[in-house]
Length: 180
Image (cartoon, helix red, strand yellow):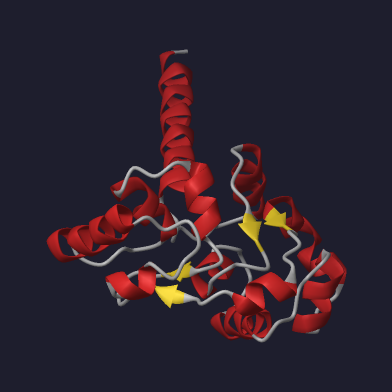
């Protein structure tokens, strides 16, 4: 009986560690469809029209070649409206991708507004460049440069948000304009 309790406690601890890793490590690759389902239950999602190669590589079974292909398509203006679009782009049957749909988010972006948006690197942009972003305040632009010099490059947009203590709303406003 004691062995069962210890085993159950260990499994609970492992599950808790996995949940923490899924939530905090943006580079963690899901190891199974069960982990994909767990990530979806925890609220993790991948915006397929804004996803980076690293985002796509989180999904089990996707190769780096496929991830790069999807990113290149979206950078060239292709929008994915449903899982069927992603399947066609990868020349895969929809059934193959269906288990991954739980974490895929299909957001619509107005191509006109995004085409006009100057996309820049947080890790290379000057204060002057940052100030071309709608809603960017001079104090925030200077804070970005100061933080980047002091603490090093931003790892991703979540790191940017956390380090500068930005609200979700403000971070969302900057998403079309910034990359790491």
